Picture 1 (cartoon, protein in one colour):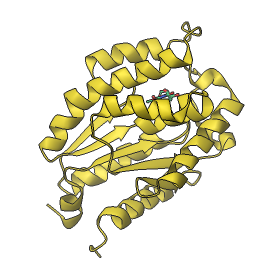
Picture 2: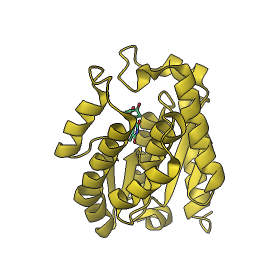
Picture 3: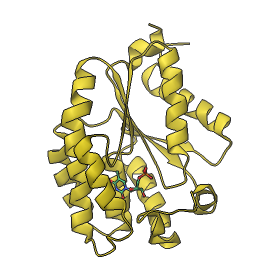
Picture 4: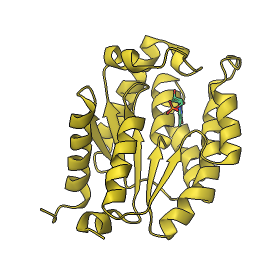
Length: 215
Ligand code: TMP
């Protein structure tokens, strides 16, 4: 195992950001690099990632459910997360694997809190229950302006993506605010560049955060 791999084994890293930020592509690239370094990588995605969670995901993203209250929405995201933590994340971390998650509590804070209007404190309280102490070692925010983000979206928008530009600007601001208030738990990556440049920026940020002694 390389020095980088030993520094990352047993860590929990989240990729998050506005819709269209390219986070899923970058997460795939990052995981490939980690596997090449000799790490066992566990990939999880939210909402979903378990059989129960995938059923919750369908309810959450179905455009027919436009009457869903913001409280219901937040609790469903957290319910899916609670299942994922206990069923998938904790066992992997205990085996010393690197866990890489596509979204986590940061997404609920940005979408249902900063943009949706729920008090941040309520979300943090429910999150304490859902994650049972398993907070990420770092959350990478792939940051992108809304103009660039819209151009990257699949034309078949889901219920969340249909919420409009003003909502998504607040989502972005919410992510950036989290990173400003907890710099030790977040890293912001400029995701407007081409995919190769963003991949390099992600690797460098992770090396600086976790592998300071490695040249
Ligand atoms: P995805 O685009 O990463 O598959 O995520 C699905 C949508 O769900 C996306 O629009 C963001 C939204 N979302 C929330 O609103 N709150 C959450 O807690 C999570 C995990 C996702």
